Image (tube, rainbow, N blue to C red; front, side, top):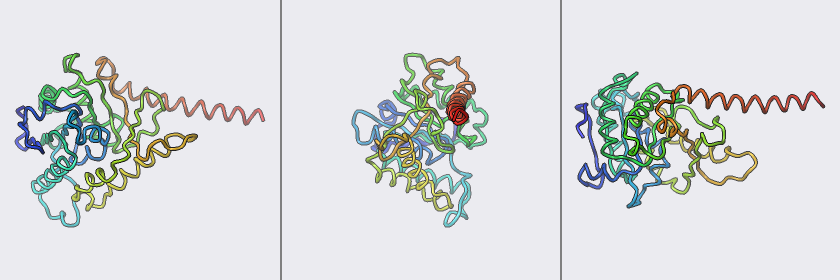
Length: 288
């Protein structure tokens, strides 16, 4: 592929030829910033980890140059910070046994609300990888850049020939949890227990962010534990760690669907669930 940004890089941890490395992809993760993949796509990484038949390809859209910085990173220029974050991301790709890592090198501002250059880069990546499963941000995320990346990914998937589209597309948690979604076909609950040490290592490489006063590593692990425990109030825990995701597959299967209307529909179902429960309990209290 020919990326549009001068700072774009492609890293293959095991040294395989780039086209072959991309071509073996089965699970593709697309995150906005360096470290997003390691904080939101545990399921995809775990599905592929040291599995010769499955390969995770990570895509990082922005360069991280404008990241907040403190402690030993406080005096770094934007270019120096970009290099630090690229180095951290490459280390994570090596630890996680990724099949490939594509860092596209955009600034956050350049992709909001839309970038035709990013559209072209994603089209090339999807043609080269043709993944079975795709993970990206969810469209109800609190972070504007995350939502912009999600929308770019959905549009790119919709542009693919029908027979080449992935069988599943998931929107993952970062700057907003997904425990509010109803426990039905709209929400996926992934058991990601059993590899806690691996994920601690993956998250721990992003020292430039953790040193800045944001304990993303502890918060992410805590969220996974909370997801597992608070998923079902009347059952014992079936997993030690759980990752929640919004099923975005219908938005790719039927490109005519509005992303906004789809998300508002999920919110409406949550509202109705709460309303029905409160209504029934209030009615019962009045009858007593």
